[in-house]
Image (cartoon, rainbow, N blue to C red; front, side, top):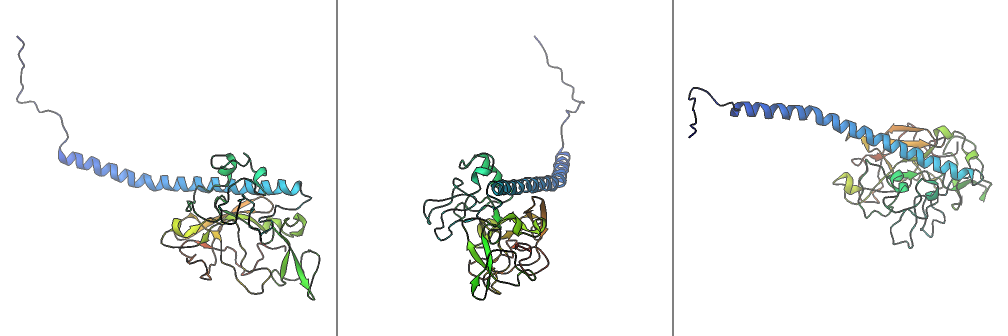
Length: 298
């Protein structure tokens, strides 16, 4: 019969409560050091993907122009019918936009499949999670310079509309009314394509501003600071500075020549029309000059 031999003088190896608490404290400290780094890396990844998306959108627009005698894609052709955007279309004015049928859809890689298609992935900014019921769904968090690039504008002289040529004088010094929204402006109308906005990170402050997700909805246009055809009338901003710090974010922008940059907000305001303050939602404009010079023809 086997006997168990006991050794009363030998202690069993085990963690004491104090040692366990020390280990937990060390793990917590390491997590505290690592998590901000991981968050920063994730944010940098979002910025990189977003910049690539913006570049792809303008490449698609340049491809459109090559096949359209130099004319950029219209951003909202036949706007009064309100059924088509650069990013998608809808069957009625009360329906949501879906990616199929947009003026740039076929030029974005992957076709126009809803949801998981490659075109949807190109348009979706990973740093933006808008509510699903926004009226500009499928814009993916990006806005087009439709006021100038996506329409054709011309000056009014002596009460008559003259041919659409670049207006004289400083930027914003002359009213420019819509000649047509069924085609975009020609490439050669823009004097400085490397300093003219094509697409930006975009959102509109609407509804409750209690949270960024609740107050910033998808919006498909990057609006200039003033209505081109109404002297002194300021638009609500739609450039979204979603990347970076919670207070002082930055917005991705792709210029007409195809290069991508990152801009800091310099100004914002609210008309009060949409029911939310754009300032805490990090929506506004970049650029030092309070005019349309980063959007218009000069």
